[in-house]
Image 1 (cartoon, rainbow, N blue to C red):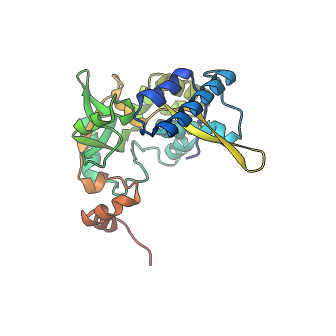
Image 2 (cartoon, one colour):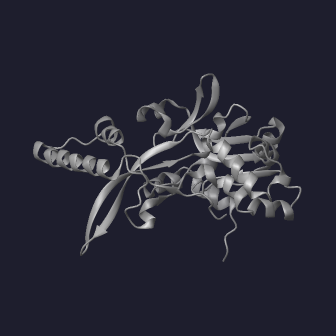
Image 3 (cartoon, rainbow, N blue to C red):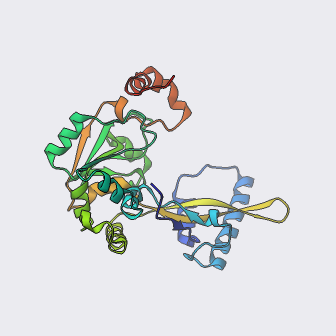
Length: 287
């Protein structure tokens, strides 16, 4: 599914930099090292002011200026790039989709879960698993009386995440027509890319936006490079569960189905807890 959305990084504001350096956890250095760091921070604040706080960051190579805008856009991309339109042309009776992360290795089509999704008449049904200490990235919570998924980036403190009992696997069962209704579209609107793009912008404006600071390298001279902090933003799919006009459901599934394999350090426990054997059992391996 070709992407149709990309972001342009921004020059940070002085407030952004103070927040990153003074309010976020930082390693404590000895006195001399700290003086060097403080001097660097002062220089970077001067750079941000001279470039223009909050302006487009274009003083670099294109791949250092552009950034991905978050996995919320993956489903809207299907609407924009013609893939969903083609899928419905080939299979006009298609009603449901299953969306999952590529690192959720145990995710597979399960008729029982699909049947539960249909029976509940949910627009979106999210699979969650019991949380372990190594699971990072948000989970299931109650916010202002509404049960929804909350991203780790939305929590005021990192350790708040450990108070959540269920981790978001991100595997989502989707009712196509109900989702299109959230975008105020129907199947017949998909060829109208102008209308689709406007609908996506309207829903995107209702979604949370997460701001992060990333370091980029700018090369100059003979092998020299400087590192600058820049701002980028993203929107995340699980925040769809917070829309008041969208009916969401949450299914607790076995860990072997929803566990994500993100780091090499997870391989040992992934092998020992039966996850590897489960993945092997649901796959057809070629000779």
